[in-house]
Length: 260
Image (cartoon, rainbow, N blue to C red; front, side):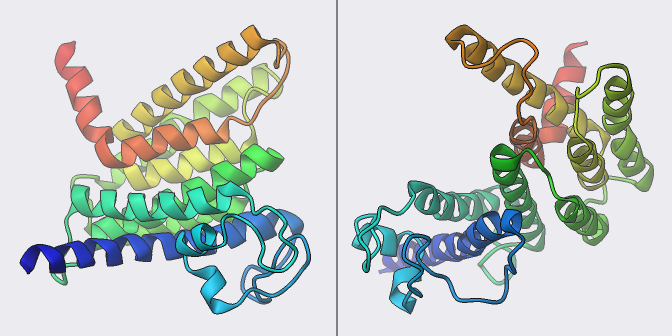
């Protein structure tokens, strides 16, 4: 009986994370269009029909509708499903990494990390679509950094301020030398994340981001889908590095330094 209750609890946790990312889906769709992310009912992007409550159950509704609108039968983008599933998985990952907390749901540190990962996903997805990282995402990360002052005692203010400039300033200087090397949104994302994660983690994140972006660029060049002077959205690759650093940044930095 205990295993059944435990299983129900994990399903509940998954659905909480999926529900939060379902709202993030709305932000990703509406923010680039200049629409309100709070006002206005969710609707089918094809026929405009308002969605019923049961059509907005994270993950489940997509599967029940077989990926099509109940009204016009237009195919629903699979990215909505995968975004919600990602939210559920990341919520569980934050519980496993940072603990369930005293209430058995998620610890304060886990919740803060989950929200940070959500901001990264929104920023990355919008950047991929529009090549713009909105300032509100960097502001949100900076606010999480302020809230985390008591949750990351190992990250002193000096380490946080060093994290702000350690990566962002070299990105700025490189952009002044090479036009279009990095966008302003990329720099602000790394500066605010440096304040949240600290110097060691943001350095690890940048390294991973450069590696991931380099691999992607190499593959696209080989396939002929990019030319050497073509620009591409770098935010998603930075987000991958920052997401990994959120879980293991300091540990990876310490491991690397131990090899020197």
